[in-house]
Length: 151
Image 1 (cartoon, one colour):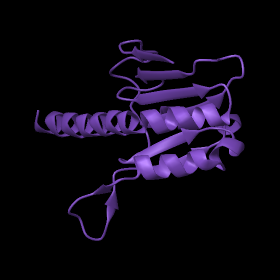
Image 2 (cartoon, helix red, strand yellow; image 1 turned 90 degrees about the horizontal axis):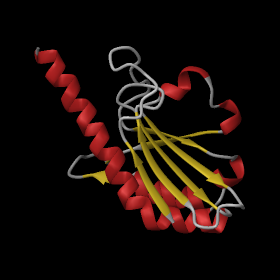
Image 3 (cartoon, one colour; image 1 turned 180 degrees about the vertical axis):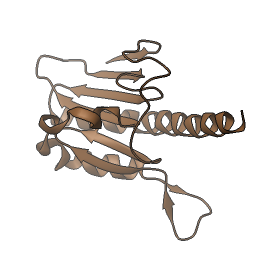
């Protein structure tokens, strides 16, 4: 399985296009068949962890499903995007972490498996790291926002 970190490869100018979406949202871009499988359960349990000690319960992330056919326009600037796909030609699987793809301060993670079962295994093995990556970037955005407000 290949793991790739892409940082600094930007298609946007730092001062121009900022992320959209609410704090704590992850846009999950995948086919309906993937979303309606056991993979969705793994994503729900791994990415929607409760923040202690808040009452009522508050989760770290809310998952929003989007089909790849409708992933166009301003939605591409969403702050957190997780792509899930199947490629029968890819025997090893891919985990790719990217930043600033369509907007400044954006986090994009791509997972690819040779079939749904392989993709499920990749999700199970990487879900904690994926959660931590999105969580770290979300807190970083919040800190940067408040630092800029003080200037």
